[in-house]
Amino acid sequence: MSALRTRRVIALLGAAFLLASTPSFAAGDVSHGSLAPAVKLLENGDLEAAEAAFTKALAGELGTQDRAAALIYLARIQLGKRQFTEADATAAKAVEELGRITESRDQAMLLALMIRFEAAKAQGDEAKATEIAEVAAGLSARQDQLAWSDRIPGAFIHKASGTVLPKAVAGLAEYEMNTYDATGLDASVTYAVDDADVKPSEAPSYVTTQVTVNQGRSIDEQFQSSRQEILERFPDAREITTGPIAVVQGQRRLEGTMGVFSVRANGEQAFTTLHVFRMEPDILVRFMAGYPASNAETMRGRVAALMQTMVWPEGATIR
Image (cartoon, rainbow, N blue to C red; front, side, top):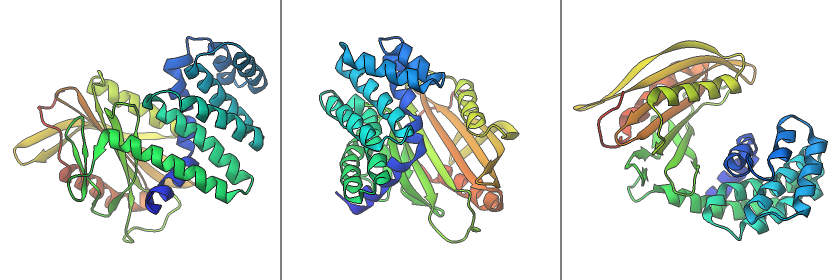
């Protein structure tokens, strides 16, 4: 296991977006099943009733998938209540359950490991936290391999679409990868700033490129969905501009939709940008970037350089 991957996964395990993604894991599996009443209580903020409901469900007959989901929800509640020993034990049971089923539960497994990681860190057990991170690193590597190949030096190939993303370009360097399903059809690469020619800031600078196959959405539907994500994440966001965008590579003209939003990040004025392209045959390419206003010009150039450098999927643009 490489030290770089372990460090990357430690950062992954500690990130809030993993915890926030638990409902997306559960939504298709439990929203209409036996755990639905307990999930509803949790969504309504009634943690005590939700905890009791998940505990009661676990005492009954549940399939492996529902049992794992209930354990993860219960461990989340325990972690929030700072019951670290209980959260670790509950998440460990979820890991055991998830080990019995297919790779489609890899994201859920990472969530369970994240809870164990946070519990170990909170209790000052660095050795245990590192051990859990190494297990998660192996799982993360397996997920990456579902979607990406690095057989081209200095680049990643998205297997399902043929999109080629550089590992580094114009002061951006690959920081982490995510595979959002068990097929590798939906995956992303996030780039972080890797040089010193930007002004120091508390607001992070990043670019995430996500490639999705067989999404079944129009470009407008995808843009509006992504726009809503930004507005929910930054309730005080101000939409500066939206409109068409084009990337020209030789004889190809790739058309999409873009938006720029003014936000506050760590107390600073910052920008979040969104670019969405839809290609034949039903391939979506989405760029989401964030950076402080003080580095706007530099970061805009970097996003443009990434779009110009990557190899786009073949096919005509669909409007």
